[in-house]
Image 1 (cartoon, rainbow, N blue to C red):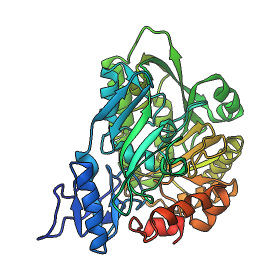
Image 2: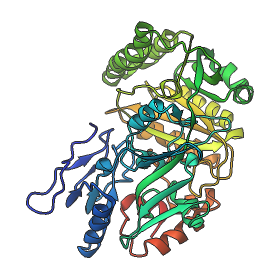
Image 3: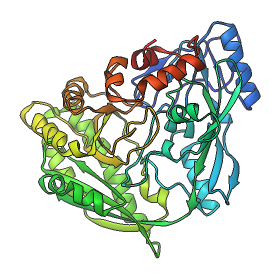
Length: 446
């Protein structure tokens, strides 16, 4: 759906067509594309690539804005390895194949009366792609999708299959849950799940000065708090998700369509297109857009509250900061935009995550808050992102592995206490760098 790449395995003849990511800002030209239908076929594809002297990268739906999955070697598409392998209701876990789309997992779990505890706001990605890059939602106590993984399997550079958990190969487990594709090709993931529950979402406009002044209070009082600030305005839209005893009260079909499809996708698309053609109109559009959203409350099962359709294409940068630094950084970002001649049509998103124990998690070892900046596809974003990145890095920020950033291994060694642990494991598991590409050379070193 989000790719122009050929689907079939190519072992000769014409080269596959170029692969492009969802945002269209990354293109790769692999020598061949493999679509294994079993773990054995994947192991064989990895061994054959090594024998041919080719690098290997697995790719999901291309929702990363970086070239994390790009390769000029063998591109592995795991989509045929999809679906639920098994449910263990006593343990509260579900094991799924790596190519399963999050939206398919969410729907399948709901049919079984189960749910993930937390998730991001987009569910197009494969489970392996989403977890390998550290995809997250917002939560006071519940962390990223990877933080909900008690076990996983991956094919290593020598073609062997390795299982890992807190008890089995715990050193690999500590790193591989967010492995950037650097340690092996993930074949299956086990997620902690719980009986399906209801969430009540309360969306409410709020002035920037109020939401920043009260940020810690909103964080403390809500299981899941997030907000959007509309640049060129003093307006924000807040969203609070909390568990509910019910009854379910989903968005009405019409009002839901108006908010989610018309305002968030249709009108927003038109407004972004207008702003791209006529940047001077953007502040005016932002003032109207930030007032168009009204307060609403609804109650539904988790994935219908956490996730929303995203049809307007964009490019994104997101940094994780210590939670205590996020308000200062956001105020600096607003001041920078206000005094610049930048024209920003996309809202800025703020979310949180508790500290976790994954080596390269953006929340590794510290309670974190995220600031995400976006630009409409086709709009020059470098000036805005560069200025934003300067603010984020001054606060010791850690960029999302799947979103635009300019950081390198030397920087990461300074902001990730366990960075050396990850690179040492990589040296052991992939000494010949079968899974390397330009992106990994930059962010992990060689």
